[in-house]
Length: 401
Image (cartoon, rainbow, N blue to C red; front, side, top):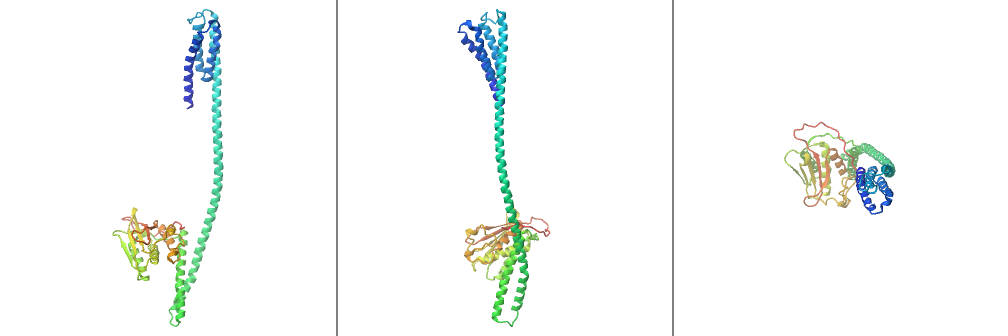
């Protein structure tokens, strides 16, 4: 850009050097010729101006034009480029050299001025850049301080969460032994025939609540394993349809009056899964559906191939559904719908999500296609055709929040 500007100034200067001396000559030709030798200063003014504004080349062009025009129009013999007086030759040489020197000095001054302006612009740009760098450095320093504080807070929260998980796991593990002793002793006593009805009723309550507490401890241990990335899975090709039928049979044993309808699409429904953990997922979802659905209504379970080689399972009840305020938090720990008198610990769905995510699957609350109720859907990775049976492996899930 600067180069183009310089070339443009040079071209304009040459054009002015060619035009200005003739115009000045036209004006001077109308004046008395007695003072013709003094006109040289006017020509020198043009030369000096061009040297200052356009550079040395336009100044030399103007000096040459001025010498020729002055010789032709003002030095005898007039209207001729010849000189009658030898001193006029020296006069023209001195004029040309003087004009060139004046133009050269003016050009040097112009160049120095331009360099000074360029240096000033460079310094201004450098100063602006330094100010920007200073602001960025200050902002970076503030960001580094905030980041360090955030890292300290994250580290403290991580340590606190680790301590909480370890405490939960240790307490849950330590509760297992006394609970087993209580259940064993109460069950043995219930088998005796020499106890009164009041004692039997009390022992029955002890057994019921001990089993409930044992389930809570088991859920807490499972959740601690999931959050600690220590959930062990024996992954192998598993028929999801058969797993659903087995879970439905288990629910019918404990709740004979509940109708469970299983709809499995024809074809392969094999997924890479742990049979026992998949059964735990289905048991939790079916028990959850049984808890919320009205007694006469059926529970529907649909199994079908999904997108990208997955197997999709949906557990549908016809109960009151999930409250809108709980839909985004339904898979969090200790979340229950108190408005419909929910029982349980509030850990079942959190454990279900942890197990499904450990299988590289996904679980979500779907919208019911017809009527009310809740639809819990989850995916598991399907078994590609022709794949050999997988070796048992251990999988670490993402942490459940």
